[in-house]
Length: 614
Image (cartoon, rainbow, N blue to C red; front, side, top):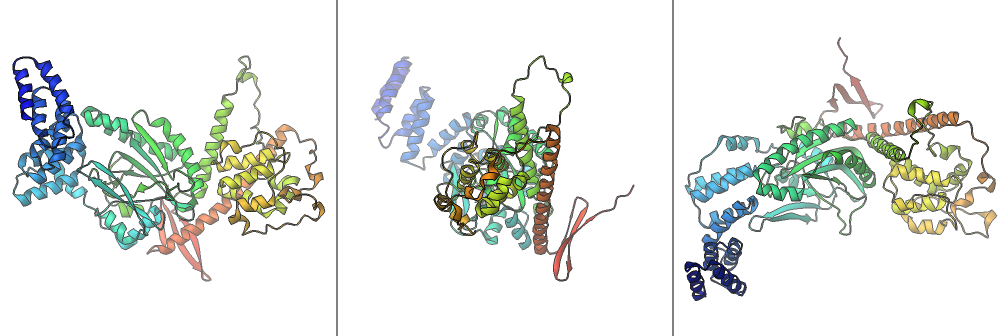
């Protein structure tokens, strides 16, 4: 083995460097599986300028002897030269454990500061004091020691935190990170997340995540995660200039996203995630089904996507209407924890990007996302999408805007009120409790399962006006696949009552789905038998276009007002339930006081507005 190295060094000493390198490459390839001697081969590779092979040989030396200090020292140099800061840190940690020294400690301490991992730097400083190793303390890290100290949560804070950010009830996740391998991830913990585990998370003892979709298919929050793209992050590790630029761009992007969301009626809780991005949290006033939040996510991503640029990407939670094949769905790290990879604590940010020092006090008055706001965002997104589609229609150049008389807004092809005024749908929904329930669910809750959407399509789609009616419901839901949207009335046979019960037994088992059609005993049972033939005859001439548009707009507005009234009542009930859990039955938000008042044994919500002084 060493004779081969002597031969190679002799060739290099004689000036035949290329032949020495070629001989080294051929001999080194045949020794990869050989145990021992790799450190000497690595040192020889450095002498020949074969730095890639030198790094490989030093790694093989560590494979043979994990305590090889010389190999560790050289690999640290390679990592720092390539800008692989995290790998350099991991190697220095191992080196310090094997051979503690002031030089190693100072290099590791400096890298911790560059990464923003002040808790790790402080921990290292404390270890150095214990070992009697001198290590300078900078003002920046001393200040960080104060700011990174966790705020001790009270029991009421823990309960409120779980009410805002809780996830699936029977499982949560714990983050792990291996410094030696530079790898990390999350492991499911198959038990409920209790205040005890949450307290450990908030104190930095562990780092936990949750699966947003609960067992009943609802969520307590939604969240937007904005991160530096992986390719940009890798490049930033090799370029300090890019790393500085990304940090500045992230703060500017955070401000722009927050402003765009507020313009849309959404007020998020903004959090520095502790690693490479921002979390925008939307705690809900009342639990919402995941499918509704998925539709909201599409609208939010459409708002935010144009702002991201080339270095950033975003994702939405929940990502799907139901958990995936593993039955848990995607997870998100809980707020205010320490990221195990960087050692940095995540924190809430104010509108100026400054960390909020009293996060639990801040959470007592954060605005909650209501059903009313969600539906308003979905409606605006739907109208904007329709407007974009209409804008793509060609307009003859000779037709100028000033030559066209102003026209009323075009009448929608279908509204919620049409289900009440249409003779066909009055009979259909009046006779079939299942279709009536699905229609109400789509209008009021903005959600349908895939099977429910199929049933709507294959019943409504066989009626003259059913195409518009079905597509109207599908547009409200937003998560219905494009292939289910109807382009023309369907041919063939409508779905039968038997197949409806087979597809959605959870719905039909709660409803009177046992209709008897005595006049049509020769036909298989289907909800369309509730519709009398004369009701399907072509309607009479419609009113004039302008008047019809005004009437439809009025009816649609009245239906919307009724829906808003229902949402308002539901929101009041949710606020009453929340106030009952508070130590004081009142809350002040934006100059408005909300308090509970009990009359005849019943709690009522009283809203008082502070008087204005001119």
